[in-house]
Amino acid sequence: MERINVTKSFLPPKEEYQVYLSEIWEASWLTNNGPLVVDLEGKISKYLNTEYFSFLGNGTIALQIAIKALELKGEIITTPFSYCATTTSIIWENLQPVFVDINAHDLNINADLIEASITKNTSAILATHVYGNPCDVEKIDKIAKKYNLKVIYDAAHAFGVKYMGKSLLEYGDISTCSFHSTKVFHTVEGGSIVCHTKEIHEKVKLLRSFGHILDNYYIAGINGKNSEFHAAMGLCNLNHLSNIISGRERIFRIYDGLLNWKHLYKPTEKHQNLVYNFAYYPIVLESSEITSKIIEALNKENIYPRRYFYPSLNKLQYLAEYQSCPISEDISCRVLSLPLYPDLEHQIVEKICKIINSIF
Ligand SMILES: *Cc1c(COP(=O)(O)O)cnc(C)c1O
Image 1 (cartoon, rainbow, N blue to C red):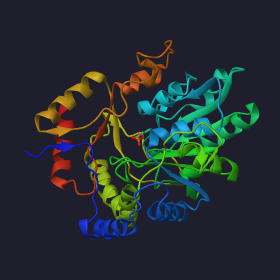
Image 2: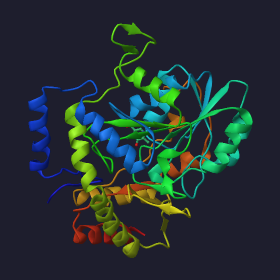
Image 3: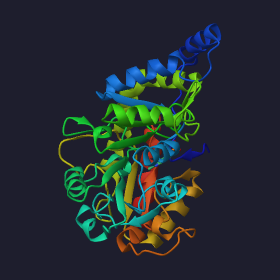
Image 4: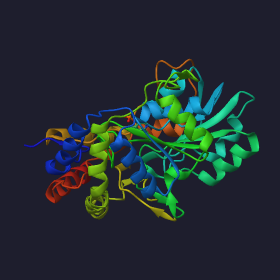
């Protein structure tokens, strides 16, 4: 029995990648803002319709550079329901994460609860568009303006998502993205920052390459660059993106049609004015017991869904103190992301649905 994971990385036809490999060999330029990185940045800027886009080493360094570029201090209000990098990037910069609980319907930070957590030490809101569901960007923007806070969106799941007619990566002072091989669009490893001023854009570029230009050392930066080889994968994959997304949608709609909705709900596609990227197929079940039973039954068939996201990040053991987030803690124990990728066989999707429905 073939092992079925929650996702399978897309690979372009080898010949397409080989064309770029020949160019790399020809130019002998492997990294440090080479021609393929510049080309990829130009093409993605155009695709996103954004002026200030930087290609980075990964989605985690993107978060760290975002925090540095905005010179954040003290406390950052954040979501407990995300991948751990959202929280660890705050801790890594020696700042305090302040968790605000999520909405049960879309599992994003509950914007109505943010104001109560703002103190004189709050400098920013760092929220994730989880599964590509847009946060309440209008309300968050209003709160940020009122209290003079910066907004960073961890948009790692949001490449290809459009909200209100523009890319979801266009919101906030900075949106970060991940191009890790498990994401909808990938460059093997990779990440990015979208911002809205030339000043921040220049700072991001400086920070990603050690904070110096030739012999002028401006700020203490880091190595956040990416290579020609990674850019080449991005250039190949960008051409396949619309097919990748439509292939994912096909699988997504089979789940929609076959799962027994009396016993579960879907936290995705809860928003108006949304063009979705079908990044994940999470379901929220009635209890953690049922969730465990489903995992066990699927594992027996060599099928491996993932608990995206578990544990709730406010429960990470290395945090300075426990902050309660009852909704996130509850849902993280009964959420499951099901296998989703373009060439997943229909009969496997049918089998997964049958197994899940048989548990109820
Ligand atoms: C994948 C992911 C990251 C980390 O990105 P890397 O490129 O793996 O460093 C950060 N936040 C979220 C929400 C993610 O899903």
